[in-house]
Structure formats: C-alpha cells, structure tokens
Length: 257
Image 1 (cartoon, helix red, strand yellow):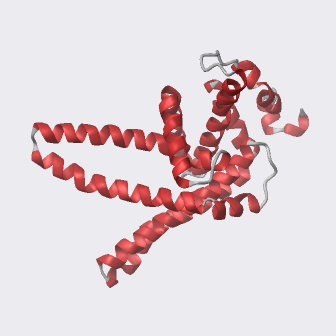
Image 2 (cartoon, rainbow, N blue to C red):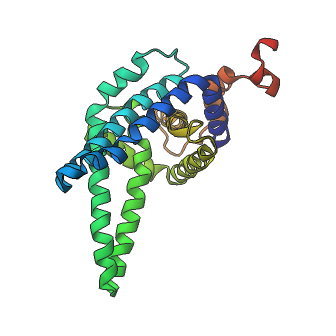
Image 3 (cartoon, rainbow, N blue to C red):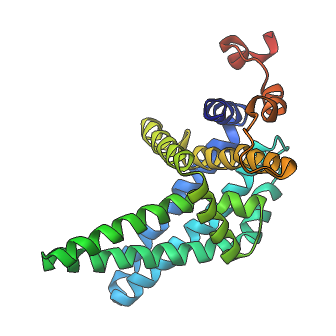
C-alpha cells in the first residue's frame, strides 16, 4: 500500500505540474509575510512586531487550507477550477485559524519551557523535558492528518483534532512513514527552490495518504470484524486503474503513446 502511495503521489503531481508549481509560488510569497512584516513594523515597537508575526502566520495557515483543497481535488481526480482553492480557503478557516493558534501556542511553550527546564539541570527537569519531547512528537505527527481530515471527514475543529489523534495512534508506523516521506519531499524541494514538489507536493502526499488509508476503515466497517485482514490489492484496484501503466516516454510525450 505504501509503495502505491508513493506512485500515486508522484503521478498526481506529474499530471498537475503547472497548478502545483503555481501553488508553491503562492506559498513562498505568503511565507515571506511573517518574515518581512515584523521587520517592517519594528520601528513601532515589539508589540507591533509580534502582532505582525502572528498575523503573518495566520495568513500562511489560511493559504495552506486553500492548498489542501486543491490537493484533495487532484487526489480525487477532479478537474481544477478557481473554486478548488478559494472555496476550501474560506470553508476551512475555523480549522486553519485554530491550527495556526495551536501551533503558535505550542512553539511559544517550547521557547519558554525548554530553556527553563534545561537550566534546572536536575532529575525532574530531565523527566519534564522527556515528557515534553514525546508529547510534542505525537502532536506534530497528528498535525499531518488535520487538513486531510477536514477535507474528507468533518468540519468541526475539535472533531478534526480528535480524529487526527485517533488516526495517529491507530496507524503509528504508517504515520511515522508518511512523516519521513514528507521530510524527503521537503529535502528534494530544496534542489528546486521549493517550486517542486514543494509545499503543494507535501499537501498532495498527505491527502493521498489519508484517502488510501480510509479504505481500510471502509473495509472494516463492511466486514464488521476489526481483525479482518485488509485486502489492499482489491481496495486499491480502482486507483491503480486510474493511474494505469506509465512509461518514461509516455510521461514526457503522452501524445505519442
């Protein structure tokens, strides 16, 4: 299943090369805001700089919501329109703004807690740092599912977060694997200045991961047996047919196939 996830993500990106690159250009421009805005308002004081940083981060998360909507449409083989971006951007706002606020608070907590506990230098501080590390790790792993869950399952922020943690705990090795996959995509993106695969490529990866993983739960619901083996070959048949057999020549010169 994981091998097919890699294949599907690659060909979904390849078949939507231009939209993905445009999304990444927009993402790069939006990410510049929390970097440039604080410097622009620095003469007005520290409070203005912090406010500008927070606003910039929220704008980034709003953009990510629109990007997740486009990624879901691509993964589901839908035709892309302007509404594929702007409708999710608007509809996902409760989740994206909540997510942005949670990330800001978590980073602020780490910036305060880690130096304090490190400075203590006793057994309690080591224990506290260990707890903080593992809780943060689970938190960041669960965040991978937030926007895919919003796109496919529910729109309530708390319900989205709950389902994200349940998916993380129920699919631990798969969750770690897609996190490593996202890290590889980010590393590869450095060679293209994040134009490809970039942030949009990571969004495609996460949307495809949840789409395929949900087949497992559809199957378990149909059988009513939680210990039933998952027939991945049968469950992935339609997606494999949609992708079809690809050749290098067909990828570059599809009209010659």
